[in-house]
Length: 422
Ligand SMILES: Cc1cc2nc3c(=O)[nH]c(=O)nc-3n(C[C@H](O)[C@H](O)[C@H](O)COP(=O)(O)OP(=O)(O)OC[C@H]3O[C@@H](n4cnc5c(N)ncnc54)[C@H](O)[C@@H]3O)c2cc1C
Image: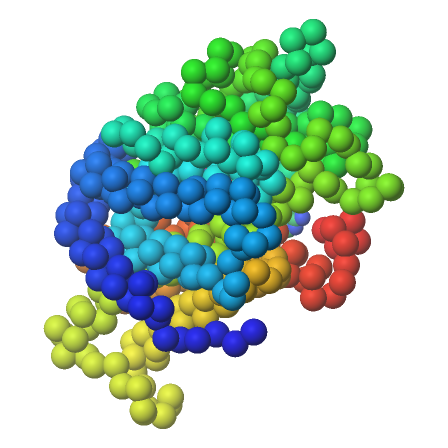
């Protein structure tokens, strides 16, 4: 597959508007929201909700039409949705990544439902993101106190009560992005990963949709964090939480590994294939913010960055800035490829992990370099550079750490299974 570097017209028209939001709405609030963690970026949320709601409505109506029309309604040729989201996320994260994460959307929950949900479930769970005056959030809860990178260790259980035909969920989920916004502050949903059979390992893991207002579901804590402090990160306790049988996404059947693979977990992988390029894009937005700021400050001090000078003639700072730029571009190209593959209907698991790993590491380094180059003012709260340095690191942690995504890349290239290379 070849990548075209021409922006599709629709995206080219939208981007300046998104840039205006990033520059005029997000940036001015950035410092205050960082200082006042847990305060909601209401200006951004209220401005974006009608836009996002209408986009989600169009997408959902299309899904419904396709489900009704069957194959005949299927799109011919590549789409642009993933590329569009990638560019949008990069731009909004350039504005402020913590605020961007509060975008009222179905996000990871929507990705999971789209990946494995039935047409009826898509309508039932996603319609709330496409109508109404009040913003709605979706979230995904996989991580637990004893299960992060090793997702097969999750202990949250889902037991079927045959008397009522309900699933009964018990367990604790931690570090759930937008968990409080979804459950306590809107009529949202959380896709909770639970096991229906622990002895089956990953094959027993299934995603369940838990709706706001479900008895037995409580948000116990919101994290105080190093970066992305405008973002909501919640711990959720499920105590005999009963949900209808039809809230399971995909089949309830457990296909054991010795029979054939990790059925239930495939939903999670499909979700990550779609979301990892977006995490990479978000990282790159933060990195670009830092890089542009450094270049502007250096230009003001009379230091230009030459692009056609031999390396040995560059000053140390010029060489550093060129290296920052190179790392950012490399990560961006991998990200565009991962998103474009999805738009072409092709598998992108390898490329999604490559982009996420590269972007997470590159941007952690780039933002640290930015602070270093700018000296004490880089470290001062007067400028946003120190904040970008704190905001950058999360991209190397969530949705699979750098180490875990590197392992995924190695497995895919070398042809090893997760049992053979871990
Ligand atoms: C702000 C924030 C938001 C989050 N949002 C969500 C969310 O919305 N939903 C959700 O489900 N989770 C979320 N998470 C959780 C996140 O995905 C996990 O923190 C991450 O997957 C790492 O898991 P862990 O914290 O248990 O670390 P661990 O798995 O304990 O890892 C600790 C360290 O060991 C390394 N390590 C582990 N295994 C290996 C290995 N086999 N080889 C080499 N190194 C290894 C890791 O890379 C890491 O450096 C969020 C986390 C944060 C901080």
